[in-house]
Structure formats: structure tokens, C-alpha cells
Image (cartoon, rainbow, N blue to C red):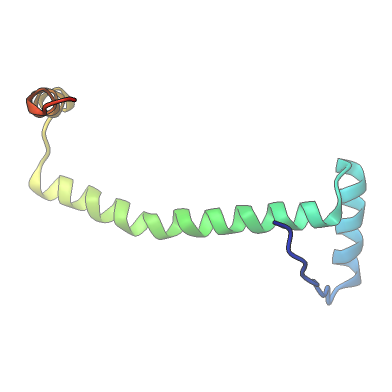
Length: 85
């Protein structure tokens, strides 16, 4: 689905730079703006996950952890207990 949106550039230089970049990359200005917005949204999502990662790391450091080989064995044991159709 394609949606339309008007973007107002308050800087003539920024608009000109966008148009020049579009020509150089053989893309439309719209494609460049859409790409930039998608990257920005992804970076915001990554940033919001950092607090979760930091909390998990702190919990791991305070409580200790188990070696991956031990976890894998437990996963394999619990997986083999499940009945498969």
C-alpha cells in the first residue's frame, strides 16, 4: 500500500542536498526519505532494547549464570519429553 505525505523543508540547502543525493544514487527523493525514516525507527527500537539488555546483563552479573552447555542439555532433555504428532 502506498501512502502520500507532504514534507516541508525549512531549509533550501537541505532540500537541494536531498535532490542532489537522489540523482547521484539514482533514487527518488521519496525513496531516500523513506529509507531514512525506516533507519531512524529501527535505531529507536534498538535504543529501547538497550535498557532491557543492560538489566539482563546486570542480573546475570549479580546472580551468576550457567554455561551454555548446561542450558543446551536441559533444553534437549525437555524437548525430548514432548510428544510429537
